[in-house]
Image 1 (cartoon, helix red, strand yellow):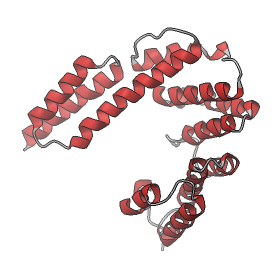
Image 2: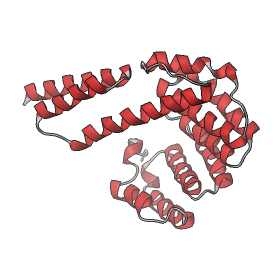
Image 3: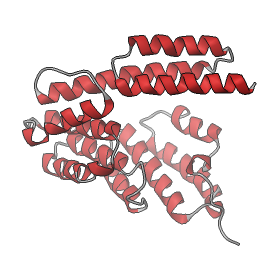
Length: 238
């Protein structure tokens, strides 16, 4: 019998994931890993081998990261990458975490090496992924007391233009931090509207319209416009 081809989001029940994140002290990485490993093993026969191993490595890596066991986190973020296709839209995320971990242990050269690997894949990355990688690079240089290498400064303008961010001032590291702050702000506001799960279409549309008026990022404005269009279409269908 062939293994089922299930979406990775269905690998574990929602309650299992919530318990992993909320049911343990973050310092108790051993219990978190034992729990999630047991849950993943229960469904191993139903899923592709690489999908199982990728997720298992990811959960272990994050368990170690949350407990500040950075060397162990590095081992499993690297293992996670071995089970990922380079075309995976989330391929850069473990690399971002590797840059962060090497910053935490003060290894600039290895962190920089992973950042350079990320930059080499930027032709396939979204503006948001590029920004996340640059933010981890800033974390790395600050933790290791190194200077921003201005050869990467062009990426700031590239991201600003691609996503429609307002122009930022200051040195390169400060500009990246400001872009990240703005992104977090509007990402959070977007999530807040979605979490309301409004049944009142007009109220939802009104919230998105206010969002558009206040937001200074073109990408998020366009996203809000798509949400308004979707709400109107759903209203017509009903």
